[in-house]
Amino acid sequence: MEQKVFLFSNCALINNKLFFVETQSGLLANMNLEDGKIAFCPMLKGYFLRSGDIVDFICNYNNKIYALETSGKNIMIFDMEQNGFQEISLECDFYEWGNFAAFERYNTSIYIFPKYKNSLFIMSVKDNKVTKVTDYFQNIDEVQCCCRIENLVWILPKSVSKIGAYNLSNEELSVYDLNLIPEICVDAVNVDENIYFLNRYGIIYQWNTINKKMKKLLTLETEHIEEESMCKIISAGNKLVILPALGKNIKILNLLTYEVEIYQDYPIDFLYNDIKWSKYCGYCQDDENYYFAMRLSNYLLMIRKSDGNLSWIKPKIPLENEKMKIQALYEEEKVRIYHNIGRTVFGENDINILTLSKAFPCNENNLLEGKQIGKIIYEKVK
Image 1 (cartoon, helix red, strand yellow):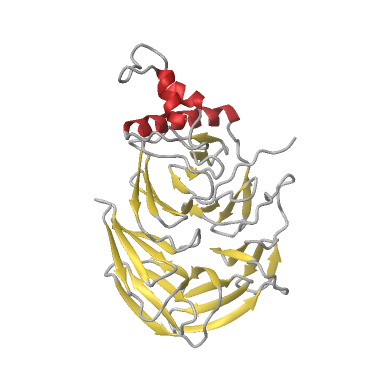
Image 2 (tube, rainbow, N blue to C red; image 1 turned 180 degrees about the vertical axis):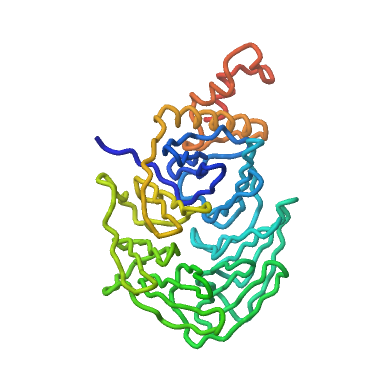
């Protein structure tokens, strides 16, 4: 029997449950990590469904989930206690995706580091006010990737012989000269006093934060393809786990011996869905494990921090009628909102006659300016 496709690109962890936006439907859902059971969350007031890869970086604080919209246009705030939703304009939409380098919270502020235009945004979670800081890193145009160590966010620019350390506690930047410029880096991870930068083709660079020296450590791939091979690097025990983008294999580097292992122990029915996206993207963590979103796979990947052990959680996906029920509620709410603001034209993909009839059931209370509901529906969709 053909397996259901159920995907999401990033996730946040609250009370041993992963929260995420499902790619196909745009619905907010959660997964119980103990049994893999997935459930759709109650309808959030103010949230309009948008299918596709809409969530970039994501974090949670005080029962609210803060997420960067992939388009770069907004910060999305999901209020899990009040079942509410709001958007804060960000205007960071340089491209359709890939607009951000880092998303970090420090105390009651969230720091957003765009990849382009030499700027950063600081949002207070107290009042959701956003402040833009321009030209914070002199003479750079693009950021490759970032890595946080305690209060410092290390920033690796593109094509510049500099590396920066932005201090979240005092909002000041320190800049250091590079003896070697890493190229096309997509991710970075901290181990003790070192930062390991991952190049898209599997080259690993090491930056020592004490002696301020950069070196090329090793190359994981013997053959380079034009597309991005690798995308994520994780530290666990004495190992670095490197996850593929369009490449085939998960690779594990032993930092004691520098031996590289190709991971083989997948579930029998494991597969990646055939979509030309990176196989892995976002993740969240607790004290013991990393949990990687199911961006293309039919299992959720869990990596144990103590020793780098990989294991897989089989999702228990809701029935299709459960999804349809909550989708219908969102559609009905959209009708009411459109009607209240006087919007009279519905696109083919916005709504349908059945949803309109549910939103405005035919009864004696549904008389508006002497018109019956059939007339209202006709005028909405004609």
